[in-house]
Image (cartoon, rainbow, N blue to C red; front, side, top):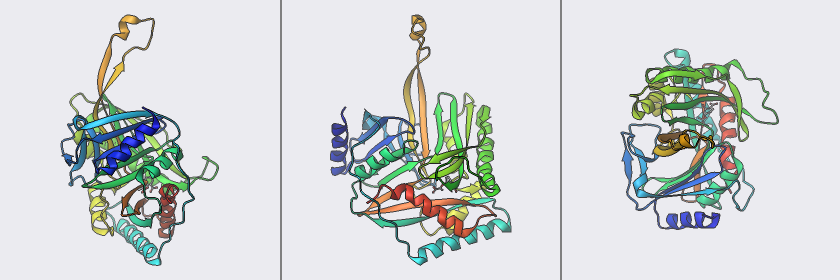
Length: 372
Ligand SMILES: C=C(O[C@H]1C=CC=C(C(=O)O)[C@@H]1O)C(=O)O
């Protein structure tokens, strides 16, 4: 399929108010679109189906599913998409917005100091009015700008339209092999990956790593944890640890999702206390921000042996079930010619409210860079 027909089909589908998702996984040139045949709202609670899932922060609200059987799936191979460029304007904040976030963070630090809570991720939502609110134009710009991110545009007429470029994998399972990451700590990227991280950032990230390893233990035969590394996500740097595990034969997806989501990278620690704190104190409903999205139980064909001389072995191709979930970060919702941009940051006892504000301002630039 060529680029024009790929995007014309999506534009037509959107014009008919029908559900779709288009995305590209990190460091890949494969663009994939799913177009659901009708406007039915399918949900999942069991995570046993095969499809594309869009899950909220609070799993008490069910996740939206585009079932494989109800969708037309298309693929396109490309590294760049042609799209008009325009210079983004700055987001203008009124003082109230800043004061509200600083107060939220200060209260969070106080709550941590009182005990019981070690980390809480606090966030805000800022609205920007757009001159060009075509979702596929915004998606194409994200696609060209953030090669290492999972970039997506998701739409359901009964739910809304979300767009994002997330650096964070919730987890991926292929057969019995599970891969995930612990991502936290943020600094601005100038020229160099060799930067000094503070103990606050190391602590904030270590909490996420320990949580993931601990939560995976009951479902794993073995777990591997990498060294901490610095990674670049657009104009930002984060600390990351890669974690992989071989899951036990009888492990199912739903309990693993419930064990990991939401991780302390987007919620806090201990999980239930942090989640309740967020639900009570943040000034808005996160909805799908810091939820997760991606392919659920897709059947993929893998060849066991790519050694061409060994023709007999080549006959052994196996069907594997694969899921790929990404955390819905660096994302926005499109509503009435406006972008609602969602940003947050991890708070620990050593956080500084003014710095946390700056961090969220820097995080908005990931999305703002492609808005006009
Ligand atoms: C909650 C967000 O980022 C998380 C992921 C990476 C680094 C983070 C941090 O440094 O606070 C956050 O934990 C967000 O971008 O809205």
